[in-house]
Image 1 (cartoon, rainbow, N blue to C red):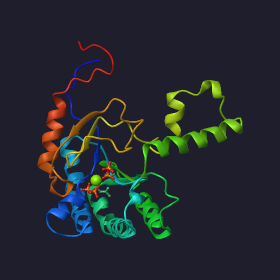
Image 2: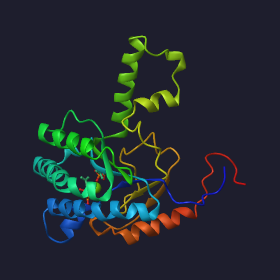
Image 3: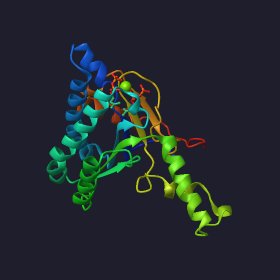
Length: 238
Ligand code: IPE
Ligand code: IPE
Ligand code: MG
């Protein structure tokens, strides 16, 4: 496998630090989430020039339900407002939007907006934005296994033929290439259940910047740094 010479095709971002950003300013956590949501537009807009075709963002994890009812409700309202407000912007930017995660637990109005934006933007081809909402990597693999087991029971697949490709087809991310680069802001060096299966060979960047302070310039710097990395995928570089 040759050394890394080009930029990442798929960048996944764990947008962390909204709460601390707000608290530092003496404001409620939701203020940080609002500021964080506003950051997404210019990052997505920067993708084509940086050669990034796929960008995936972690918006709400299967573990985030453990937060206070006020914060969870505030986040859900923010997601609804965000999708409604950005809908035309996605069209202007040629962005195709899709969601991963378990939608069952989300409220009906939000699910309708998610369906609407997916349908509206489905012919866009400049950037593919994937938003992880009520997403957890383990939950995703468990749900995929459940669906696959059903197909085994129905005789649609022979269990002896099940391999990595088979399981990958049942994942929420079946339409996505694996991430080349995973970025996490806010100084935490952990995955927090994001794209576990898909990131097996991703490159990681953990940076101290809190998400509401993340800029296209910082993004560009990380992408340039990625170009210098040697990805060997278990082989020996030439
Ligand atoms: C990330 O920011 C956004 C979500 C998890 C919804 P946080 O809310 O986790 O911010 P910190 O980590 O508390 O600063
Ligand atoms: C991960 O951030 C989830 C999102 C960014 C949506 P958290 O802030 O929830 O992660 P932990 O709990 O600190 O690991
Ligand atoms: Mg956090």
